[in-house]
Image 1 (cartoon, rainbow, N blue to C red):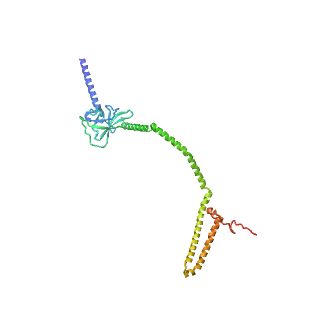
Image 2: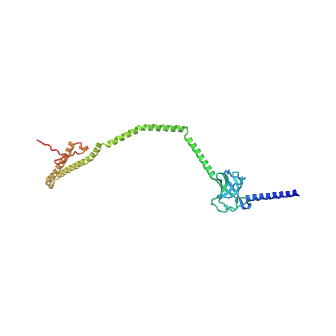
Image 3: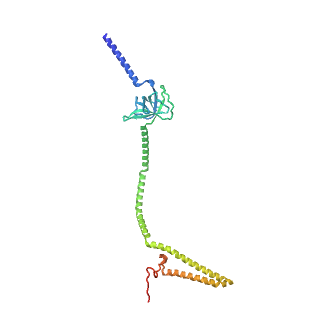
Length: 308
């Protein structure tokens, strides 16, 4: 009798333990009615993602990964089945992204809203709706790095094609020619520097300055000469007009007009004689200008010369 009571107690304990285990599993897994299944579709590498991994909605834990498998219709796709709480507002604009947590590097599914379509995504546990997965930050960096390396390889191949053996020889010959041209140009540059130095000294010479001033003084002297020649021509024209007048008035007025013309001619002759005398005495006046007149009595520098 005692053995039967012990067996009954052991059976009751085993049943209670089994019930407790079932209750724990049910509590840990959550009620099936409180979640809905969705399928995340991706063609990317999902290394580090395992079943039972977390599913987060905008950073909040809302479910877990229940299954990972290949798409039987297209082996390029990977199907990740996730169980999400029914109170999470999944829409047609919701996308998934593979994210990593902290320094441990544990992967989880992150659900994000793009805002493109706010129509609710109706759940269907028999045929779960699909959610697209966008590239993660590591995927984007990997694709960018791959493209950069590809471009770098193309650039290096192009540079290698440009700098082949023949082109390197041409480049070396060109550099040698440039060096020779630079060496030949140095004497010409030195001569040019010497010439510029001499020109600067020549422009600073006071004789050049005096010559420039003299050229300015010769202009008025030549202008006076042209005026006097014009007056002489006018006088000659008057004489010709008077001689050619055969009328009585012309003959009667010949003498006064001749006297007037003789006076003009005498004055003009004296002026011309003075100019010619100056040019004869000081021909350098055409270049260096007319000489200064000696100081007269009462002027500074006057020196009287006594005669016997």
